[in-house]
Length: 158
Image (cartoon, rainbow, N blue to C red; front, top):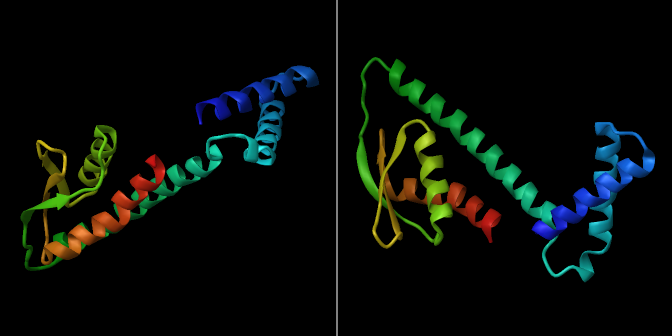
């Protein structure tokens, strides 16, 4: 992947120097030419086409923004109810993530979402301990995190 990015940047700079116009628009058009060349030659390149991973990273960011907005509305519902009726709790989230970077990313995404907080990670990195402000159904919450954040992280990193 890094070689593809480097190749693409070299193509973009070469395009800019050949055009003798040192502007962002010329660099960008050269970058697009490099992407096109990589796409056409992807059969001969051993790695997967790197823009797929970039699109998956963008989808992860959009997923986080969506979850952030939904959880903010959920917190607002609880705050403005006349009777504050929540069921806080701590639960263990089993995870399929292996590297410390993946686990750290998941823990941060959970902690940055209002209403949840990652408290600890098990010594063997197989579970995350999470405090939730309102958790009527633990299994539903575990499935929700695994189907959203963990799935998106796995798509990005593997």
